[in-house]
Image (cartoon, rainbow, N blue to C red; front, side):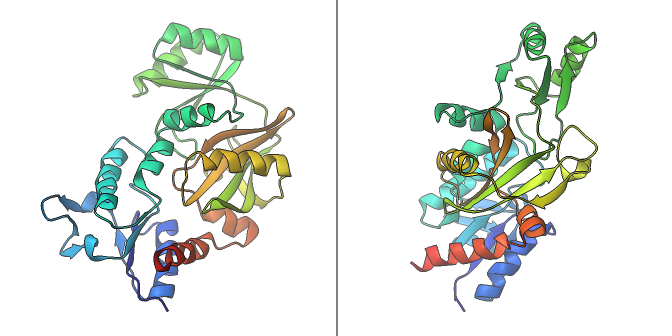
Amino acid sequence: MSKLKIAVIGNPGSWSTERLADALEENTGFRCVVEMSASSMDFDNRSLLLGDVDLASLDGLVIKKIGPEYSSDMFNRLEVLRFFCKIGIPVYSRPERIMAALNRLSCTVTLQKGDIAMPSTFITEDIDQAVKVVARFGKAVFKPLYSSKARGMVVVEDDKHCRLNIENFQAAGNTTMYIQKMIDIPGKDLGVVFLGGEYIGTYARRQGFSWNTCTSSGGRYEEYEPGPETIELAHKAQSLFGLEFTCVDVVETETGPMVFEVSAFGGFRGLMEACDIDAAKLYAEHVIRKLEA
């Protein structure tokens, strides 16, 4: 058993955070789950405090989540951890790499710079322009810059309600509107998962009673074997970010695979339920190997 002391940055009580903490404890005998909103950074003393515990005394940190909801607050917490890296404490994945994938626009810019195939995407703060692009797309998905599992996403069609729906979306706090052409999916999309840049498996999210495939909308996980073209595209997409563990959201269309996004954190449940792959265990062992190298 390793003697390393590794904490998990996450949401205490959540399934994925606790599963990763369990896996690390099984391998090291040490368990610590850190909620970043409850921690304090002392720059003078180079300390990150959780109560009376100084996390700077540990051997490393693994980031599973950085808060219960996606928001700009996450960047502040990651900035603290970015300084943590500066003083020599290993953090997985590196905070600046998570930052590049955390915001949907930042993620898309990186993917576009890498020539990754994606659905047609339009960014604007102007409602008139948004109306015009919906007319061009026919049907579009308006996506918040900070969200996961389709939360806050709105489907807007080129009809008499178009402008009102767009105005309501922007008024809900989406000043910058991320607009993506709605494409036909073959009843499912894919989570293609990588650990340390290496492919470990794929699960499908089968569509339920909604336009999206989220389990909260009736979707379900299924085992799936993608073709080499899909794996190659996903591998290229995740390589642009350098994350230790991530899932690439891919849809296989009639014209070839396309990427929706690269997850800043990745998920464990899809691989577990669909493929019986314990990604938390694999991730814990991966981090331990890197720290002991």
